[in-house]
Length: 129
Image 1 (cartoon, rainbow, N blue to C red):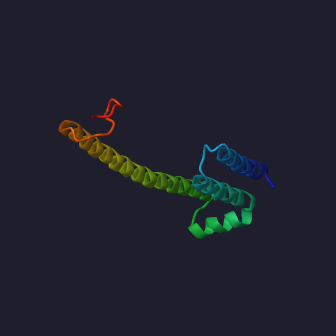
Image 2 (image 1 turned 135 degrees about the horizontal axis):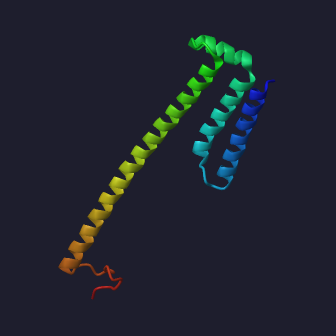
Image 3 (image 1 turned 45 degrees about the vertical axis):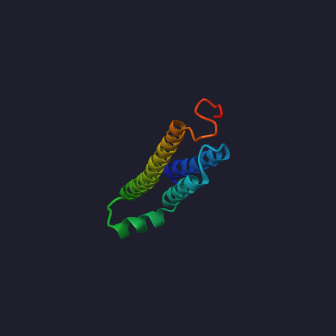
């Protein structure tokens, strides 16, 4: 085992441990942790199993093993960015919908207060007679 392989294995294990700690402290959801654990295991496999890395390098047509590692790293980053873009889009749509709902409810309360048919607590927290 070369020094670079040992460092790569150590870093992969360290990332997995950090991910588990973040999940334990509820700073990272389990949904996202699976992605990071899989990426760390994949990096460790590529770093430690040199025969597999060489075979993958030949299969994708790269000249050097480092190019293969760089390729998979770039692919991982692109997948993560796409995933976050999808999540951000969904959250933006949800925030827009919630803001519209709040605006409609506020308008309905204002209209009820103007007509005096409320009967419930108003904006000041006091009930109408």
